[in-house]
Amino acid sequence: MTSRFIINVMVAMTVLIGLGVCANMATAETVTFQDGTLTPTEAGGTGEAYEGTTDLHLREANLNQDHYNTGGEYYLVVGQYGTGITDDTRPLTNFDYGTLTDYMQTNGLRIQSATLQLYLEGCAGSATTGVGQTVDLFKGLTAFNEGTGAHRNNGRDGRLAQTGESCWRKQTYNTVDWAGGGLHSSADWGVTLDTGIVLSPAKYGSWIDFDVTGAYADDGSDLSAQNGFCMLARHDDDSPYYDGSGANQMLFRSSNSSEAEKPILTFVLVPEPSTFVLAGFGLLSLLAYAWRKRK
Image (cartoon, rainbow, N blue to C red; front, side, top):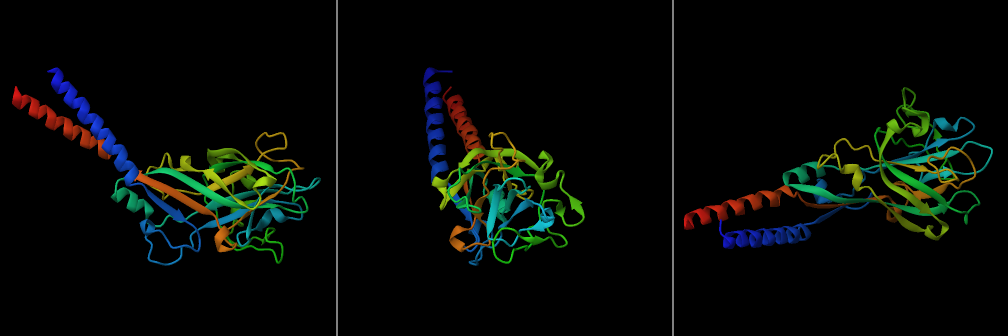
């Protein structure tokens, strides 16, 4: 094998890699899901508004409120407010991906990145300038049923769960239990997606970004088995996971709030690397054939 041939191969592969990187950048697609906006074409959009987000928070509280459903509230609450009572709250959020799986598989695309955005309004109760809260976000392993529970005036307490709805005590009221009530068991939540997110007063009235790319790492382009995301707040001593008192309940806007503040999930899709690998093998084959002809 001549040195010229080796140089030609190296040059060809360098060009191929460069073309692959450029193509990757040039063909990246952004797909965004938010209730009230147009359904993405890649997810089977027909020009109608997307309404596929489901969310609620599980509430452990006194007065039997661990049987309350909050699926109709306009707040998603995380953390605990007050001392001397049990009032821990944990949000769950999921999205309807429509035909996005088919679109990705048909066009040889994969998820390069995924970002969940939640609008942080502030802190519950009178602690509007409280110390905030540190939270971690996880991949949900168990499906939940949003329900329509809503309090008559405060936007976060919910009402007694009805048949089939999720609450702290029941994955499905009043028949199916969580592995651990209120997601106390890691059997209900899996991969840590984003950790140590500090919800400080300086961030009130702004969007909080969570990197959720890891939720799709094992699923490739198949989104059919996704159960969304769950958020857990930490102890006051910063150790996972909250089960005491003295921290703040932080208020995010839910899918029932005003359109501009509803949860957002954004994907960046790029071609599968295998596309360029196959092209590389093809180019090498042609070069080898040309070299043999010259011999």
